Structures are given as structure tokens and as C-alpha cells.
Length: 329
Image 1 (tube, rainbow, N blue to C red):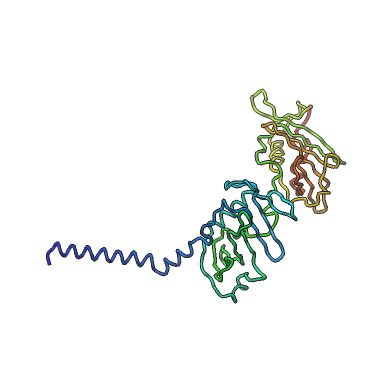
Image 2 (image 1 turned 45 degrees about the horizontal axis):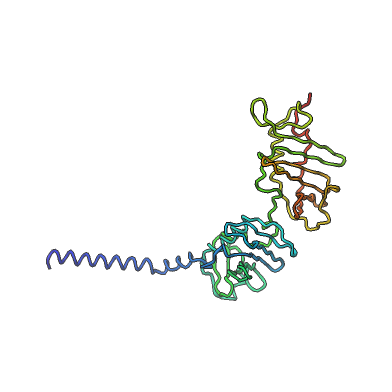
């Protein structure tokens, strides 16, 4: 055998061995299992087509719907409560749909129906998740069971399949029928921030009545500073008043007020907050009397949804001027 022939033969052998190595790596059982685990549980599910999220368990059903005409960028989600649409958390609804679309199959656990109960699944257990498109078309459906011991994952069973998978943690915290998790509890628009408020009026009625109005004005040092109307010489702790403004801007409810008869109006409100932003938009918040559960009914005038505000949030913003003044002339 000539040298050239020997080199050619060795080269061919090397290619054959390399091909065998690659073939073995690709088609080895471990590689095949990993590819199966990484495969999408709902291949072809497009978030832009989802128009409704339904999550239900043995006692509660949550329905979150995207308004017609809303695009894939998000927005327009509402939470159905007794047939009435309430604001839903746009970020949580969008994230849930995206996580469902990206959900990997995970590890195959069982195909045995007798094992379902031990995994938190079965006819009377688990949580059902359904994503629907326009016309109520079912785009994806699964049953979620319990979390795996020592794992952040959870057991899931796609509807119509015998297989149960242990999948990742992406949905673990969101597969819930807790209404407050899905609700949008921010009361003022997200464009309202503490720094954007240029005028703020706070008034409380009753035995501890007080009222004040503060505006941001440019000082002699060319710095925006709070001034109390009618008391321009009163020294103000600027950081404390700015903190009140930030608390007003970020006010949120603990839940919706479902009994509209308890919603305050201008004649029954026990506290009123008026604010104006740098965009010259004004807002008015009305608060009703403290409830037995230490929450206050709250209405943003001009909107249909009333909230229940926790007492600690109410106390953050309903402060007399003594809370941020250090003296008067």
C-alpha cells in the first residue's frame, strides 16, 4: 500500500468515526430525552391570537378577556366579576400568555391514570387552564397539579392526553384563581408620578378635619419647591411633602369594591384629594367611611370602578400639614 493510499484510507476512517460519533450524540437516548423535554408543550401557540384566559379549580373560576381590537403588544385585558368587567393587570395577563406559549414539555412523569391523584391531578383536583382565541376557539388547555417536592416545577397534563409532565417554574405562581392576583389595583394612570404632580389638595372631614393645598413653584434659587397656598412663609420639609405626593400617585386598592352602594360621591365623601399633573390633567379621589375590615371605599371621579383601599395606604396620604411643616412665622 502506497503512502498516499494509506493517508486516504485513514482519512476516510476518520470521517466514518466522526460521523458515527455525531450520529450517536444526536440519537443517543439521553439526547433524545432532552430534546423531548425542551420541546414546546403547545407548539404553534401564538400569543397574539389569545383573547381569553380561563383558570378554574373546584370552587372558583377566573376569566380574563382582551378587548376586541387590541394588538399583540398587550393592553385591553379585563377581569370578569359576576358578569362585570374590571381592570386586569396587563403585565400579568401578557406574561401568562407568553409563558404558556414558551412552556417546555419537561420530564415525562407517568401515563398511568392511577397516579394522577398523588400528583394533584384528576377529575376533582388540580387547576384547569384554557386559552381561547376569537370565537372561543380553544388554543391551549392543560390541568395543573401540585408542585414537585424540592422543585420549583409543577405537574401538568395537557387536555386530551394521558401523559403527565414535570415542567418548569414559569407558571407556578400564576396558576391561581386569586382574583386580586389578576386585578389591576393601581387607581391613577401610570403616567401620574410623584414628580409629575404640580398641585395637590388634601382634605379630610369629621372630628379630625383638615385641608391644605400645595403647589410646586420655582424658588429664587431656580429650584422647584412646594409652597402651601395662603401660607407662603411656612417652612416645609420638602422631602416629606414629596413623599406624600408619591404615595398619592402610586395609590392602589387591596380589592375592588363590589357593593357599589358603598361607593362615595361628593356629598358623602369623608376625604377628598385633588391633584394636577405637569400635563395639566387633573384627578379627584373620593374616600368613604372606614369599613369594618379597616379598608376605605375609594372612587376616581369619572371612572366606573370603585376600590377598597387598605388603611395603611389611606394614612400615608391623608396627612395634615403638620406632618411636613417645621413651623410658621
